[in-house]
Length: 484
Image (tube, rainbow, N blue to C red):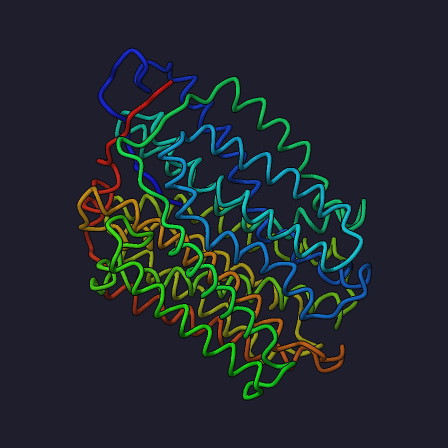
């Protein structure tokens, strides 16, 4: 995830070039650990939703908020967190994010009610927004050599893909052994270890020129995302044409218009709206959204179908996603290599084809569908997810000058989280109030949506440049100032 400036300044006594190779790769390991934590927490809760629902006495819509409170807040604050880190110091903001994330995880584990859990998950999202973009900037600042930096970013992309896919497996194992609260307890010791490692190994750094924080833009962006996702979750319950829904539509439109007007008038806007005049950038942002819609629809529908309709345990449900995790883990670094050699088009075609094939495998899902077909579908979707992330980021930043590449990556990262929130909201709406016997049939539109997301990636592939080097160079040439 890219949100801040992305290279080191020339060597100086306090510059990243003075770090030993072992120290530089230790910085990568520490930051990747934190990134893994954020990625896992985006998906680990999915497999535990039925147990959380039974424990707190809530239905599917309430459970959708447990997931989306985290992703909506994270999406709204990703860019501003990067700006804060550039201004006040990346290590400082990173440690603050770890602390907030750890305390919120503790509150989630102790939550006595749904409302408390949703509020704690929102605070978790605040902490996560200070980790994922800032950690990557720390890593790239520690790697002054372009080739070493490229390898580090490849490792980073692999960790990110693995973390998202490993969440359900980890969650299933923890819930089977210790109950649903353990998916939050597990964060606490990891955060404590990360805080110690950051204090010992990670140098402080700042952007060459700290950006001002766009508070009005941040509020309006978060309101737009929250209102949109809230309507998707609550629409089936309140009625799509009811007065509350109509009010929600009006507020969403007002937030969007207000955001555009505010951003056009600011010298240092939260988002560079001029980027949206570039068709490759727009399609890459929409593609990133589509990928995460597909992933999260798959994870939620998989959890509810296998546990409610087939009576599987959380452990078995998590284990069923192992093919997805395997596909994502193997194909993420392969996608990065393909982008480097041949550009973004081929891996995007592969991502779209495999994702669409996985969704189509399950469009006739019923209670008698063989486990082999389900596992094959998960493998195909995991392969598609693994191939997607590197070329989408490359397409978003390709051809941009250094001054705009970072914010382009930031918007793409935000789009991923928006896609995650929308995917959960849509999947939850499809199966809300449906009993076990009708659950499989109720999921079928969701699998068509997954296939449609894959087909859309083929459209994105047509807009992608066949040459990757421009995008890589754009991202690589951002200026930094190391301060410790």
